[in-house]
Length: 411
Image (cartoon, rainbow, N blue to C red; front, side, top):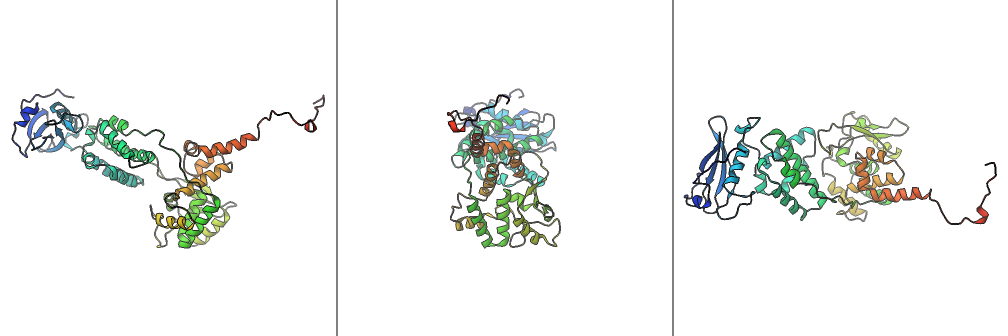
């Protein structure tokens, strides 16, 4: 950082407390175009950064409480030197000349990430999940001023109300938003704060997947058809292919390929994961019975029209299936709090593993990775491999005499 500036008026708490209570801060220049101000309150004072906007104006931002009564902690309560460093951090113009632009707050970073996801066709629910759990004190804070300590405390508090796996997913989305903000503003040089503070919780992915028997899956499908033919078809395809609802919603009429010996769907890939992902399509086989239903559904419909529609005629969207599926599960005698739509996907994957389908093919057809399959469904892989390996076991017990066949000398 730049050389520290001395100020007899603001440097010590005793000097600051002699100032009159006022709305207008007292400022001291700490760098070209950057000043540090102190606003005297009836309680603890507030540190304020003031930065020139390059147009003969400036903008100001509160950066923390002064250590007038409490000891400085470097996060929320700052002494004069810590406040000076923060003000310099958000006001510096190194490399890019961004000093005339007010640094983004966490709330603004989330808005930018939301817009980026919409542009890329990503899941904006990730942003909503983060916003729900963030307190105002973090939302209003400049990204450049975040510390690993406060982010770690927030993450640890999140675990008290959410499962570790859910906390990890929320933190991952939060980190993605902060990384995007840092990429767009070179003044943000504290990436380590969220890489450390929002680090993944170990051993969080403890598999508690609900695996359904084929009989129960059929009962749920039948209950879904009782609600509507459109919803029944959605649930049946989800059960047969193991695809997510977001994938099924993106199916087009032309993705159905019935004129083959073995009918199939060209299933769109999901937008999960890192980076910009173009939607690709992978072949997923379906049985003739399902192909027959789809053949009647697609007759004389445009090739690019959505394959699956809601009873209203509009396309399926996120969570539109939740209520009807819960009712179907309840009709099948199961608990909707335990059996969600994702249980159909888990059951499809396990069904394929038990049928000796190579793991690589299971992963490809379910739009996931071999590593994820092995980590999430290792118990089922272990059970199945045990049965296969048992065929080749050596039995060291003495064979029965009647079963001993002598070898010929010429053999």
